[in-house]
Image 1 (spheres, helix red, strand yellow):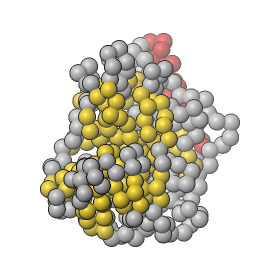
Image 2 (cartoon, helix red, strand yellow):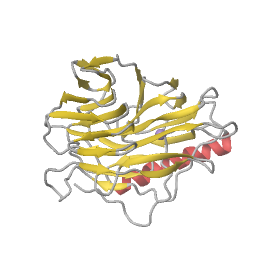
Image 3 (cartoon, helix red, strand yellow):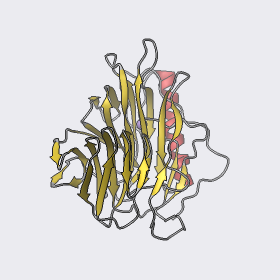
Image 4 (cartoon, helix red, strand yellow):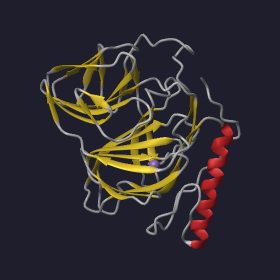
Length: 333
Ligand code: MN
């Protein structure tokens, strides 16, 4: 997925708390903003991270929720041409529909509901995402994980994983990243992370242990839930107060489906601009220039290679980077 907000200066933020360095003692409900994804008949997504008041939950740095949208004949569904990333992993988790993914690690994969696709950008990757012709509804989440210093200049990679379906005290749980409830997802992460889907029957209250050292958020896909005494609706994200050792989810009068997203505090300042996660302004400028060279090569010769890897033969066009802001991007820590 590619960021297409009019002002693509997403955030300059780090691990600090709301007062600059303190603990977070209250839950934060983060309301989504609606953002068009791609061209003139763009699909709309609901974005809850990053925000001015919150940049990260663990290493999770970008949360988009979308659908269900019916794909009308002749309309787009998801159509995101080739675009670059640095310094992050993309996590694609679908509830309905299928998306064809191609990347410069040489991957061609169809992403399906209940199966996670994890793409590691390292120093540079590019990918495209199109809903398949058979897809009539698109519904899912596109999530980014920031890479720590030890991994963010590494190799590009792609992993696919199908989590087992756990029945836990009446809930149905799929752990797609990290370890929880006695199971471990195999995709490689570089900080301690948790990513799981939890389905709850209507009217139930469900409890699960948490690592009190982790930051944890709950993104609601269907229904509504009460978390930490706060009612949270569809496409909203609640970040738990620091130090919680138990998650309590209360479903209301309809079944609920949520994503539980957590992990150890990231601890490194980040600069996010467009599809890049870096540490300072100059890194972002260099990545943009490197991508624009590949854009120009694609346009003039029909193929390209470089920092972001060789473009798949199937690509006809790629997304150019927007203009840089006139101010310098600064990290905060
Ligand atoms: Mn992307």
